[in-house]
Length: 413
Image 1: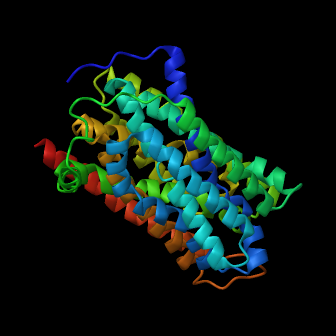
Image 2 (image 1 turned 120 degrees about the vertical axis):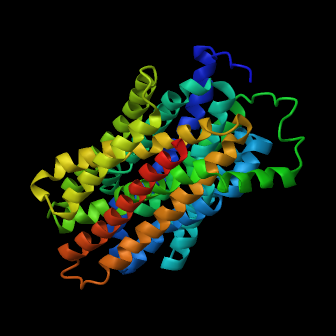
């Protein structure tokens, strides 16, 4: 397989920045409900389970889109696919802003999830077309850092904006920004000419068959389940339940909750970039990104244990560590693509993403269902409810990491 020539700095930015802008919006949409949750609960009288279902619907539609998305990315290219889907996200944001009921909110949230479903995968697919494989952990880390910036924008800046406008007006603004991002991706992003043996000439039956091959691969199943559970807990808590925990368990004010969520999101942005840089540097010293990810994920389990044990006096350091170490599982996107032929990159990452976002939907909604088993007192969920919900997720992740370690040794032998 021929080695890709590195693009010039100007071309690299023209490739990277449009993708990064789309992923920024994707992560902002993913995380914003953690801040506006009190407004949604108050205006629409939502239970904990309702709030969990509403917020996690993003992950359900996002996850369901992944398998066909992988085929479309490999067949049509990332530029066309992502620009088209972002129009759906803008429609979903507008519907969310206008919603008179919980049901319409859920439909709008679902359209948002479907519309941004390509933001990460299209970016990674595009990067495999332009950048050498050994640079992908670094480039992907930088991209994920922009996602962290989107998470930052969804915290204190959103809380500040809510002092001047309502959450409905905020979503109308997001709809406009999403349409702009779609136009930039379609008109600014260059498109790599397809190779002579590209998937445009490959029958659709063979493309779908390749997805079956991925799901039958022991290599895929050695990495994906544990990593998916880690990402599910990370995104499920950061995207919704961290805010209520800080309010109900740590007893912080609304402004302080937003400040702590901002710190967590800042750590996410730093973590994505730092993990990519660290994996790239350690690779030169014969330490694989898989090993870096495994160590980071194990440390992430310890941070979650501190949340279960209610170390509220260390709420800010815990938020920082949670955000930083929670990014470690994302290194396995690049690791998986490097273990399969390059023409399968889109389908490998979307197959992995199907597990990640399916697990996140179940985790975020499931934590809400568990929390809802306890009575609500003066608008606050019970402390024990969070310990039970977070503790259940921690136990599942421990089992997933044990499988990760065991299956890697089995394959290596």
